[in-house]
Image (cartoon, rainbow, N blue to C red):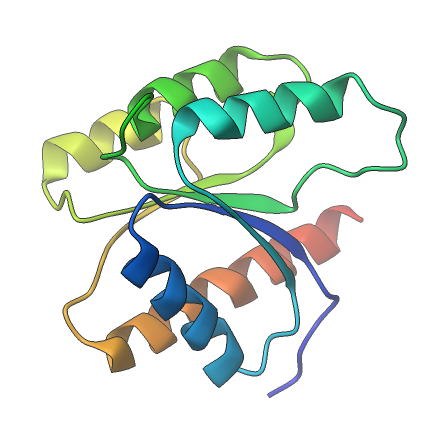
Length: 145
């Protein structure tokens, strides 16, 4: 498998087990990306707003994997805030959640999410989905670089 450019990916996930599974899925796929794990939407917005106010030495993530159901500030609120911000709205946001219904998916996509994936039941499925998300974002980003 041809691995593209090393990406900087922020994964917003409150469950420690899911964070471990994400890390393992990226490793199993051979991706050597820089992964930053943030535990909730409130902390994500603090981080992104700090980036907006620092010199360009620190870059914005290539994309964000965002859980919906989190404490402090859920993914729906965060998605709305990101997409309303003139600087942050350029960051692709992919929803990755246990919530698997068509209305929620439609709502998130209409709010500006780049994609919506339901968390799979098996680890093998997670490995495949991570590869699909990662490769699709790498292909998209290479076209606009």
